[in-house]
Every structure is written in structure tokens, then in C-alpha cells.
Image 1 (cartoon, rainbow, N blue to C red):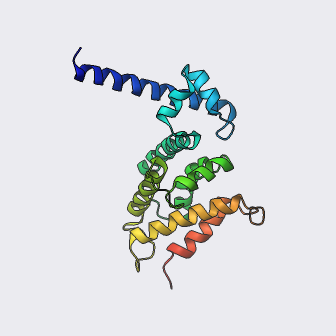
Image 2: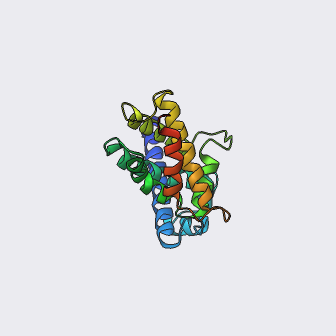
Image 3: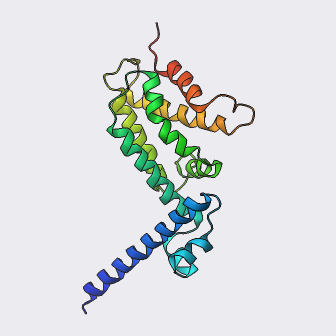
Length: 197
């Protein structure tokens, strides 16, 4: 067998092992949740050694970056296929499935914040990439829509994203959790996107 063929076989085996680990992690998460998932359960279910896990992922957090990033991407695929919202209410409604996922567990939101790029993470991983994609989707929504025109759609989209994160953050704050994220988001977006009289 040539060196090239051997390298390709090793690469295919590596990809299969990684996929097996990701599938095992998804199965564990579906049974017990993100925070409760343990590396030991994943390797047991995948039928690999613990060292194999760490050859693919630095730690549980790195695995979560992959899994949570993939789910955010899936939600963004759905959002991107929607027609551009023409009202604040339509925009909030379109983002609610993503918000619902991001708030499914406090742990999930914590991982999202750590990997979003906001925490000065040196590596740009899947979650950070989804934040860039989310801003692009919202920017496209804001072109030619009846929102403010004194600032760019890109800046408006950054504000929408920041307000979405803030609305979610306050949901987990005992002092401010009496207002639902959608209601809080709509209040922020009305103030941010509505043209001044």
C-alpha cells in the first residue's frame, strides 16, 4: 500500500471515529442533557478509549463547541430560509426557535458565551462562526425594510444580536427574569430599529 493510500485510510478512520464520538455524545445529550453529559459516557457508548476522545477534542467544552455550533447552524438554516421580517414582531418570532435552543439549559448559554468570541477566546470555533453567520442573516433581513436608515444594516444587525444575547442573559438573572426573552427582545428592537420621529 502506498504512503498516499495509507494516509487516506488513516484519515477516513479518523473521520469515522470523530463521527462516532459526535453521534455518541448526541445520544447521551438526548437522554440526560448537555451539562450532565460526561466524557466517560461518550467513550463508552462510542466504544473507544478515553485517550481517543482527547485525540479528537481538547475537553468537553471543545466537544460542546462542535455540537452546540452545529445546532445553532441548523437553526440559522431555518431562519435564513424565511422571508425577511417586515415588523419587529415578525423578527422576534423568526428568532424564537434559536433563542429557545440557546436557553434550553443555563450550561448551553454559558458555553455559547465562552465560545462566541466575546470572551476573547483565541480560537475561532463553530459557535463563533455562527455569530458571524447570524449577523449576516440579520443584515440581509434589514436591507430595504421599514427600519431606521440613519445607520448601516450591518450595525443594526450587530445591535439586534447584542440585544438578543442581553434578553437571554436577563432570563437567567433572578432580578430580571420576570420578563420573557421575546417580550424583552421586542422592547429592545423597537428602541433600536424604529426610526426616530
